[in-house]
Structures are given as structure tokens and as C-alpha cells.
Image 1 (cartoon, rainbow, N blue to C red):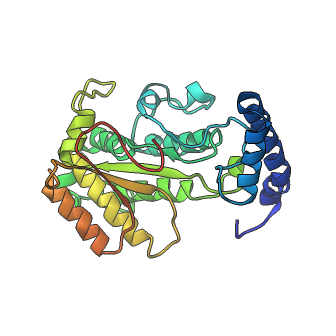
Image 2: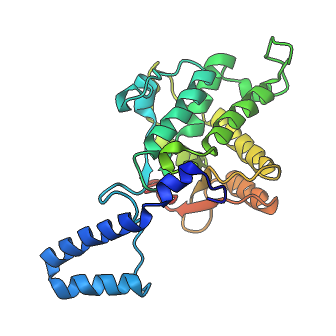
Amino acid sequence: MENKNIATLETEIYKADAVAINRLGMYRKLQEMYGTNTAEEYLRQLEEHELYRHDEVGILGKPYCASVTLYPFLFYGNTCIGGTSEAPKNLSSFCGAFINLVFALASQFCGAISTPEFLSYMDYFIRKEYGDDYYQRPDEVVDLSTRHRTMDKVITDAFEQVVYSINQPAAARGNQSCFWNIAYFDQPYFYGMFESFFFPDGTKMHWESVSWLQKRFMRWFNQERKRKLLTFPVETVNLLDNGEDFVDQEWADFVAEMWAEGHSFFVYRSDSVDSLASCCR
């Protein structure tokens, strides 16, 4: 909100009225369920900052955060939520349609949109174009244009397209950018989540290439933040714990390495592959 314009004014100017309407709605519901004294106590605690309610400016009942699966996106693109982008066919269309998807979903929620499968699905489209062993040939020139981009450059350009687009102001969110989360997985967490997963063409995920892509994105994003103020995505690494130590020591060491290099992200440490963690559940 540091850059004020007509778009931010249009959202901010009615916030006091929105808060009043939402508080009245909650007051009446509490009064109906628990009586006037409880409803009055609710207002008092809000005013005294003993109680905090998230985003009172949103429409009463509008969802806060959401963690979404991208699986329907593989079949229908954005068409099932009112968009025009059909199912992605290659890396370029995946990135473009994914950006549209995040903006479309973010407009319907007060909080964050988490897409834990983002890098796993990006890996699929990279493999469709460049082969399952693409991660073993990052220095190979794969672009026939005058730029002669290497495999690594094609991939980091895709990172750049998605990250910089989503960090742009969003008209549907009062000129603020979308709040976007992604997840990383160590090997046992990955297999626990996706071992029985199949893409629409019948192929499965590849841990080796997904692991490489996750690490490449983390390194790229850490360096990119030294050049630009990039808030999103918020990142969470999911690590499996056997009760004594991390099961995948390689990924545990990589997390420590990234922290040592100044990267900022969350770690979810669990003794079972039963959930994902970020600010979205």
C-alpha cells in the first residue's frame, strides 16, 4: 500500500463501513446463539485488542486462505472457474495459465492461495519438452533463437515469468499482489504424497528431477531477492522426522545450507506424511 492511486483508494475508502457491517453481522449471530452479554463482550474485546479477527473488511463469510490442488487444472485449465485458458500443453502455456489461475483464485479469498504441487507440475512440463534427463544437462543449448539459451536459462526464465507476474499488483485485490505459497518436499515426504499419483497421460512424477528443480528454484529465488523486493511465494519445506532425526539427511543439509546463505522460508517437521503446512491448511 506504499504506492497510493485510484485503485487503492477505491478499496481503502470503504473499509471502515465494511468493518462496521461485518461486526454487526457477527454481533447478531453471537446474540442469537449465546445472548446479548456475550455479543457485547465480543465487541469490547475487539475494541480493547484482546481479540483479533482476521480481515473484517472482507465480505462476511468470504473464505480466508486456501490450499488447492492443481490436478483439475491439468484437465480443464481455468475454464471450470470462468477463465478462458484451456489445459496447458507445454511449459510456456503452463506458466501463463498458472499465473491466471492464481490471480483468479486470489480474487475469491481474503487470504493466501497455496499451490504445493507447483514445482512438481512444472517439472512434468519441462520433461515433456526436454526429456526426463533435462536436469542432467543444464548447460546444453536448447533454444534455436538468436539468444541460444541453455536449459538452465529456459528454466530460470520460467521461474522469473511466474514469480514477477504474481508479485505485480492485482486489481481484484485492491491493487495488492496475490498472497501465494508453495511447498517443497524431501524424498520420503514426496513419495508419501505422490507415489500413487499419475498425470493425465499415465506417467508418474520423477523424484530426481523434481528434487533438482526444487533446489534450483530455492537457489534462484534466494539470489533474485538480493536484486528485487519479492515477497511471494512464501515457501515451506516439508521434512519427515523419524522421532530422532530427519529421514532424508541430504535435504536436511540442503535446508541448513540455504538458511546459512540467508534464504528465508519455513520448515514443517512431521513424523508422518499426513498433512502439508504453511499459513494455509
